[in-house]
Length: 577
Image (cartoon, rainbow, N blue to C red; front, side):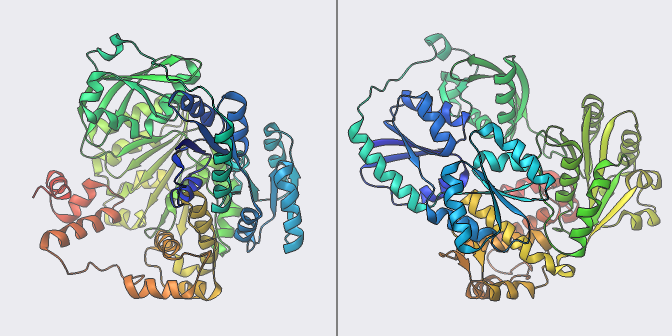
């Protein structure tokens, strides 16, 4: 039995591997990592008894240079290139491919055969990618095809990146190569114990992890109480690891788990293997609701569609991104208000400036935390969601914060309804309204801009194919026409959900009309009534979940609408009466 490790540079490759029939001669484990992260995982694999590593592209090359284990390269086949060109064939945008010669040569041949207008750029090293992308952006190119590095760089520049994925054919070929290499290689594997008995006997929970949050070792207390492993599954830990490894200094942080907040100290353990130690000094009960959060590295997103609104948003983006005045975005649920706010943020600040997000009403402690954050962070976007649901006293406190002109904070508010109506009723502060609405943007419902639907569908299918490994890469015209006829009560959010369900239904590369008809028949797209079936408790759970969804999972607002306390809502969510 060959013990092999697949290091996948992107999530979609993981999903394809999971759905394959693994040969009976191989035990295959899978991890997601790219470039340097993949190298660190590969180094640890040598100590964990793996006999061979399977990876792709630049990640495979870097691993091969750094470890003694044999490395199998997953090739990019003609099928893979054909799939990616099919994904972009309907785009009315300027498209370029940036890659090494082994990719660009075959791609150029396919483009000639398929008569596709795709600009080919061949690179010799990774360092060239950013320069080429900057030139392409200046020339009006908006869609970039390439490997993981190219796609990541493209997104950082606000371009749409389309990843050249490896299909099941390439993976099966790699498995056969693994079998061949295993018979040729017989290397010494070893395992190293990193910590002494003193570490195991520490009276406080302690764990050592690598860059990808994989456990290297842990002490007795950490092992006895499984709740501490919850720390390893938080997104917050990724930022902590990067800070510690880059600075070498200790990092004290509150890590929020499901029911607890852990006070932790993170420190660098090992320079060569990039290991980080986590000590849990204290834990406190987590507050019922979190209305204030900071997103440290927001990702860039594109404006999608060909409607008049999409064109207007694109044309006005330089104005929105450069203004020092507030922006107010309102519209129905699911129209993309928060997405537009993130696009404006990225266009103004890039990905290295955080977003401070406020959701609905804030308690006294949260208001104080917001004041400190705004004073401490030099640049930020203050994203206010549903400010119309704040009390008068909360509105007064917020007014003082947003009126402070000495800080470089872009204030963007998003809401499902126009605050102007609440001002007329006296339910919202006129002064705060004036502060929040220098620029007003109304997000039109999807039913009034159906020209955008094909573009959204193509974008979602490409996203699902890359991130989740879904087979569907396109939709037949008659299926598209059926979706164009629907009213889309929950707008783009509903369309994305429907596209995902259709992608799961089909086993081929194209979604057909029969799939749409079946989904309409079974579930009723556009029918969001609560079904009267099951027990009273089951119906109550459906009502609660529906209200929570409409309130963006804000438990305070949901409890207020349901006429119950937050404590009662928590009990019902956890089936405690």
